[in-house]
Length: 519
Ligand code: FAD
Ligand code: SIN
Image (cartoon, rainbow, N blue to C red; front, top):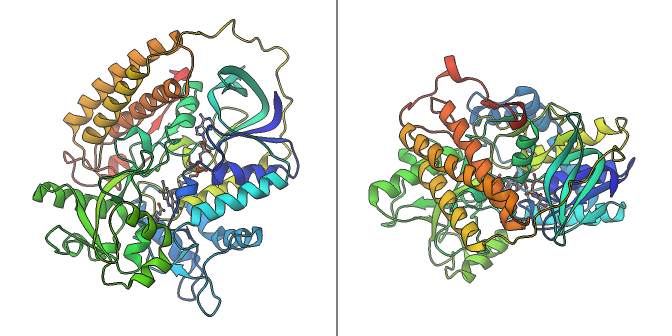
């Protein structure tokens, strides 16, 4: 099989690239589950864009840089903030029906760290609306979509990417392309509790690393402060959008006391790292398993109208948010680092690009400003598609030799599940919201040992989704730990009690890890 541009992933980044590139080239999108099963599909709050008369691109930039805590790449930040208004117009033109005020203006919600109302949304299902419109558009534009196909690894020849290995209906097949675009999203599933879809297992970052791509800033893991405590949905901790606090939701301890004002003058709308740490500290101090997100002062009709998905889901989970405060805890949500790319989304490996959450563009620095991720994904996917237009290299498959055979023996699923649980637990307990050197070092030893064992057993068994994801999860986890150990300071999302403040003199720089094959 061959194509001009092979995109791995059917979220906002992959589909935006595919939509653009299909105008000039043959594009194939490969995705490991049903096409809509992406983190994009679960995005609630919306997309940040300076549209209000009191707002400006400069303020959007300022807020992004402040929340990024000194590590953002200002060129990337300027780019996304400047393009945000036109991204909204473009999505509207494609058919995304953003929520409007009664006087027919785009409604602007508020989220943590934003100094203005700036979040464009379709109530609480912004990601799903965008995903559906993009799927429809790429289908209309003739993009080939391969569902339930898992990309295992990149194929390199003379240090250039020439294609990928794909697991399709139990068979491993090579797929060749002029360029490969990694759009595989996040890594939430390296942790025990995450808001992410089960697809988010760091596959793209991990396969790029194995192929020699440079990886950066993996220590900056964003924990969303408010995920539903207790019951999960298909393994996912259900998110309670920050937009709820933007509409007046208040965080309280179980005895009904507000606490965020003690931690930050912005109270419940402080940036996520501050709110997540505050909740963590209250839970520890009070020895309680959850805090409360209270919106009982809003009318039931207002809650139902503004947050229909959240209202319905919470009721299904046993809490009517109009009558009872919602029990919430922080959960792993977003990785600010990833595969290091330039302003055109190119990695250090020729013919390999990365976009979306799996890429490190420098937009988010040490902490992502809420609702900047969908925006970044679109802006950088557009740039990648534009730049690549005239760079189609010849597809190289003629000299390629398919390895003799792949093992046929089935791996033991109980062993895989056991490894997974142990890895996620270590990450949750030792590489979480609050870190320290001792536990990070322990995590490095323990995860390092599991990584060795998993790398040994991997080639012995038939590739299955579970085995492949396990290998990627342990690799990604080890990258997070390595970056976290290198940063001997506290900044943004990386909080290490052994170094309680920011150290600009030594650490105002990205944490960079060279790809495996260059070691
Ligand atoms: P995704 O949308 O996650 O897509 C990844 C794709 O890659 C999937 O199709 C997956 O199947 C595929 N894939 C992965 N590995 C493989 C493989 N090995 N082989 C084949 N296919 C593979 N951001 C905002 O800006 N605003 C929000 O309101 C917002 N809300 C959020 C709410 C939730 C619950 C979550 C989890 C995140 C939210 N985010 C939000 C973050 C944002 O949704 C994501 O960062 C963004 O959607 C990532 O898009 P993506 O295209 O990079 O990846
Ligand atoms: C949310 O709706 O709270 C999530 C927004 C984001 O992750 O940007």
